Image (cartoon, rainbow, N blue to C red; front, side, top):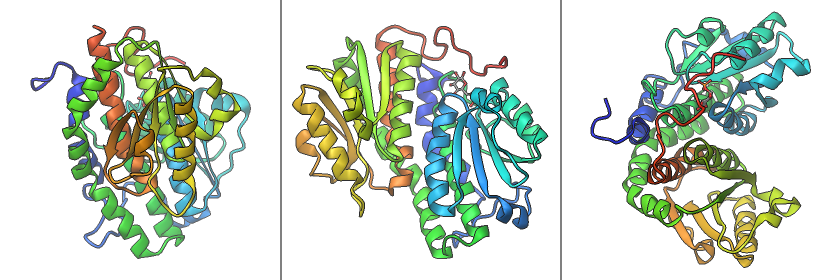
Length: 368
Ligand code: BG6
């Protein structure tokens, strides 16, 4: 049951520290070595992979985008992301050395099932990342990584998404371990960062009241934009999707670098724009994002900035600041998505919508 929460979705948002811990449980040794016995592909088969294509729909496709960034960086294997329903109709190039990853919380999404069937007819190996034991997609796959989020009742995915991210990180690190593209201690250090996520998430959730206040302030918004770059780009897409699904609000996510190529024309006085700021690092990602925020603020946008807690450089350009725990860039989606889930859940509640059963949507779409 809902354990005192008004919605299953809100309950599931607050279950995320536990869900993320469960997704990691038993999958690494104390020293950070990955153990993914359930990936029933031999080390040789894993070494032979020369391309990965991840297929999924909706939220699952956004988790796939994060996976692409992580897997290419850690494993140096070309990795594509494709919406399941576009995949087989464009005659994709598949060989026996292509690994197709079918990403599906429910394991029953027909579009994704058809994509994996097509991949198998071409001789490719299919690995499912799935939350539902014994569902059709893992049953028809060569291997499966279960996400262990527990049952997700709310139609809009929350803990399903965060645990998909963890499963993707585990897959990427496991491939890096088997293929030797990362040193053991580098893998260990990322595993330890993932192990710290539940505690980080508790802190993000402790700030829920501030996010609810934000939702009250923007209850009359007609459009909300989301900007991110690198691993923050899928977060922007997910933030916008949640608002569409739950609040029936026009919302769009953009890669921040794309702004000047078009979307900046949309910026007008008072427009709420969520900006997911990458951690400060060696590259220029952070500074480029800060410049983008300056640009839109100069044009009157109301900037709602999600940034590392001690990021003083961006603070002057934030009309509202949401502080995120310090984590590596590739892992930031785990913590950055949660305030956006809370915002959408609260805004939809204030608008009087049924958060668990949004109009026109189904939890799993079993028709193509
Ligand atoms: C949609 C759901 O129709 O299916 C989304 O409403 C979900 O929330 C998408 O992200 C994909 O579902 P699944 O189960 O394949 O991950």
